[in-house]
Length: 111
Image (cartoon, rainbow, N blue to C red; front, top):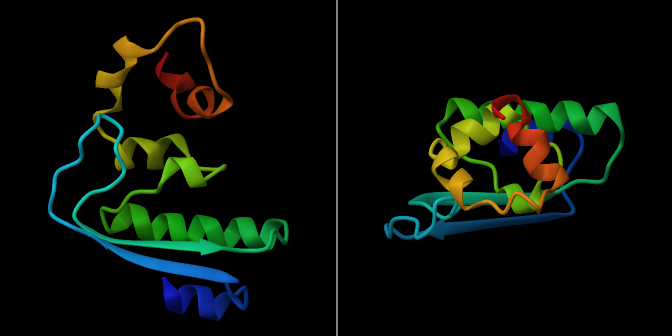
């Protein structure tokens, strides 16, 4: 990922790497899981930035990683499914009177 970012010429103005422990996630949609997490902030430069984000998504997807949904505004339904394969077990707990653009964007095809 770092090499891909460097080659893109779109350096992140903030980068954070954290190591999670081996404790299993507590919730149905919990993000923490064993391994490393990397967070980057990029200036939005239109299509160039979106192309880099898709490239990084591909690395995450093909390495069995996950995207943190609370920090992402463009995650695809496929990456959400790969990141949280048991998300459907959460559906019975959703209040039908509440909705979000995030949830509609990522699960609408499933409804």
